[in-house]
Image 1 (cartoon, rainbow, N blue to C red):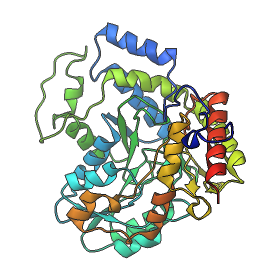
Image 2 (cartoon, rainbow, N blue to C red):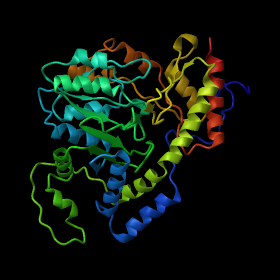
Image 3 (cartoon, rainbow, N blue to C red):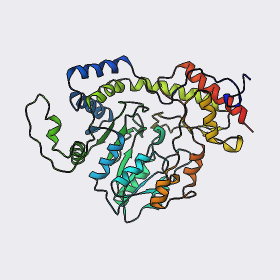
Length: 398
């Protein structure tokens, strides 16, 4: 019974459930939040400004504007680039719904281009095939923290006069040929959601080198008020504001920024720990019926946000979902990144997408899973994950 997985009547590897994506939060973050609450600055204030400046310097860009989520960042970016009804925006089907939903919210049509099997990122060759007279922008998604082929994508954008919004939700630390991901396109959008490498629990950031775009983002993120409105409750003196557009309530708060300030300071330490776990997984799983993540080119930096092997369905007696259920019964949390968007009912009913249109995205979609992969994981946590995966796959292996 000892070697049987829990799904077959054996004992689970853990007594306590290992939550997928639990962040590493320390006393520094807790203390900073408490200080903010005692100060009375709990809305958008000095901590947000500090966090923005830290992120701007980290990305070596002219502007960094903190917002309430990466979804907000993407939506605002599309709006200030004047994406609207009748326009098309090309992106990957292998992404979270927010990427495509924001295109819909702007009034445009999400046009999917298939991915590369090796990288799981959008394929520039497929992007070129999708460009029409209605195409106005490309949203590359740096999936799991691996940079997209930005030279090829930016070349397409320049030749076809398209704007580029980088969805860098997974890619805070990523580099492409020495350049920070998020700074290669017109705008870069980042996520600080609870599972991300740098978390503010909820939050996002837009970066850009273009002054006019930054000014519009800042205004639209706070009801369409003039930029001075961000300082209207400061100790710099009373300021009037004007409403210059019908904006949104997308601003970040000092409570969230308080967490982010210390998360950014710990970023490299956390990145080293995730890389250690990545190597342990790679070495532990290399003989199993899994396709492991491919190596990153030496001129790129992977953010190591998600560890996403593919289950070799031809070599096992279970589906990916059955494998995940078996992991769950071992008290190991896991995720799927992602079920391809063209397989979801909304995109099929609204835009006529159907199974079979993007075979490489579907191949990945049916096989991919994400294992616990946080800097918070202890050595025992990682060993438990390895033991559970090995035990389950030994049972289901053909």
